[in-house]
Length: 145
Image (cartoon, rainbow, N blue to C red; front, side, top):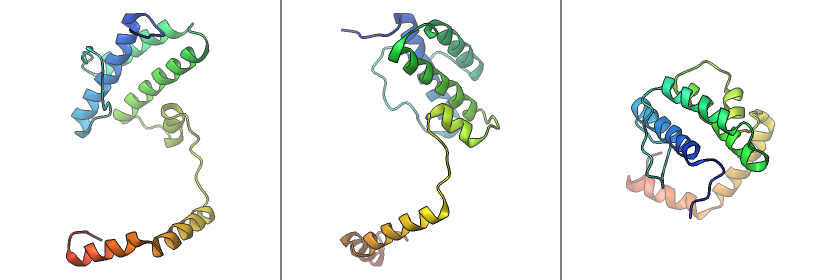
């Protein structure tokens, strides 16, 4: 059984975009961003221009999709576009990338709040068996400081 919110070609185009972005990430940073694909689709978009054109095509196809499926897919496709821009080194504010890729606010945590959290962690760390175990391993040379 196949469940889709789009036609098969649009769904496969979305998978192609993700896998092709993964290929670009591998080329640029020697790391993967797509941890799994359960599709027979193989990456076919060889550069960022091809990826961008495919994103444009998919955006047109999902523009009228209503409800949660439409919101979700439009959000994902927007994230693909911004992720591609980040891979290309576009000079955009970090908050803009986070807002468009992860859809999270990029509000800085005030230093006083961080200090309070740091204190809580250090208290918990100081009284934990983990600290003693790490010290023991560090002495044995099996754990770097």
